[in-house]
Length: 275
Image (tube, rainbow, N blue to C red; front, side):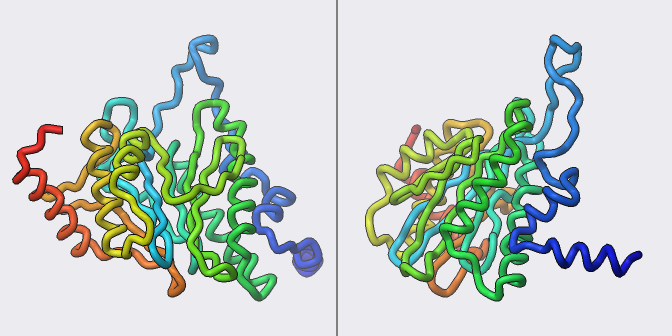
């Protein structure tokens, strides 16, 4: 009996792990969780869950960079000061999450398995466009949850090994995929971070300059958005920053981020800036 089941699984195997779950175990997908009825009409208050905020991504000479602050909130309460919102998707791509934190992290893990599964089945990496399309399909699968207020809005970035360039992709709650040029932001502090990027970004930034620009844009977002956490020298908490280039994805060490954040804080203190 066990051998027959194993043969059935092997016969139905596809290069998409998500399709496999949809066919055989749909209840394991992030967007298929059963939720209680919400809203005052049903007499049940809305779910109070942590939300992840503010992700920035930008292109630089030779690659792309993505950074996220470390704060999660529930309404006006800080739920976590240590959450990580930027993850490596595979060797040549990274994913940043904004929205309902628990579902976003589950979706990230599923996406990581999806890419690893494809590589094992096909014997090659999925193209960057293929990765971006599959992530869009997974977000679309979460639409029923999004309609209940549990939305996930990611940013995706990677190095296109065929074209030899870094590329950025944004999404909406329906899974719509949009390729961005130069830089992009998502999350509650995105409008402030985007304003900073418009002033700080320029073509052909070096990698070190790009890291500094990303950290400063998050600093500006934290200045005006209470849901975004700025650099915290007391707790030694710094943004999570990944760069992706021809050599692959790399997390920027915290000691480097501490120096960059310290320089930004010192320069603003010296300038006696109010805003």
